[in-house]
Image (cartoon, rainbow, N blue to C red; front, side):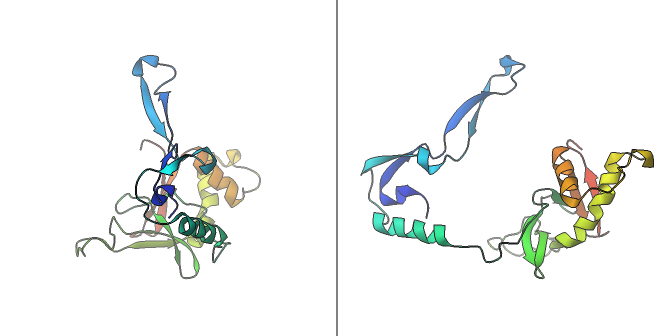
Length: 188
């Protein structure tokens, strides 16, 4: 419950909109609307209620305090590859999850508990992060070129490889049938 509208007040500027050129080099293409979540200090909240409140202001403020004080149960969980790993079965991006007391990624192939069970749906795919990370240095060498003379003298650390993949917009594709990874570049 983080929306102050529950208190009956009108709120503006929570999600401001701007217009930006689609292509600054070609102004003839026009503009597109861009929205993002504004910070609370930029919100404009009405002084008087605009509609009947769903909760009292005191309860709303109390809940905000409870949410702010809550700490994560495992602050050392780090999903280093979030958003970079895709499913080799259905093509969806794998979601971060906690499996066998470790960081992992999974694909449920579009299934949610709200959907009915479909027997034709493939089995869920799970891969632990610690099974992926050792392969990243080899990927870095592949990206450096096929000639070993082009390879760096010392292998880069894992974070450097991840940053390189993010910069080059490389997607890792996990194929559970072969239990291996492939790489793709944007547009492929």
